[in-house]
Picture 1 (tube, one colour):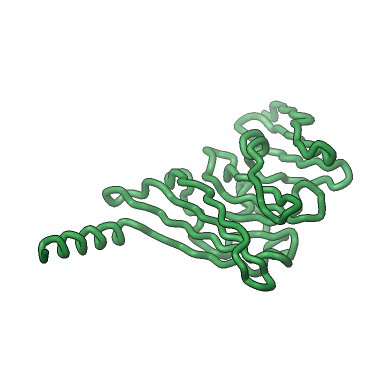
Picture 2: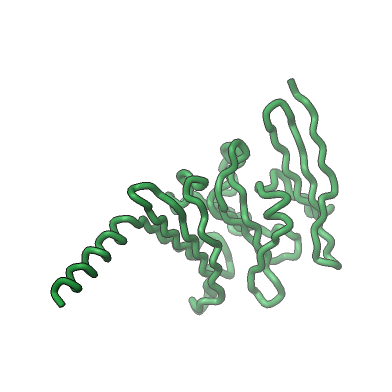
Length: 207
């Protein structure tokens, strides 16, 4: 019995020593919700192998949990230094860090904004960095019930946070430089069908 207890203790100690966790509660990014992001980075033989990211959405008034989103197990080698600083977030709803100049298309680990121009806030969350174009963001949009649903289309086709949001045209525009080329992608939202499409994609050689 003593041997079993000792074995369980050492197993718990090993797992604890090989996991890094961070919890960030964000109360200044929304007028309606509070967001909590839990990130557990598991280590494999001393090396980070993957990160489990859980996003919880709370009603700001009554603090009731409204939704828990399992963002997924992300290869930690793709996250680099993401989710290490709770202040590395941004909100175009409350203005928090809104004017902070992004570095290499990095707008923060978590960004709140009205991305489909319906008057309800949406958000993106860092899903890992690409080689030279900043974070690959995962896009979530708020539905009529106040829940957030993933947009696989924008996550897969756009990835980066838009450099320009055009409210009148209902477009998200991402301008980028990739090697010798400068490109621009324009995604347009149809409010009736509630679907996105790639409206325009141009690239030109700059040197």
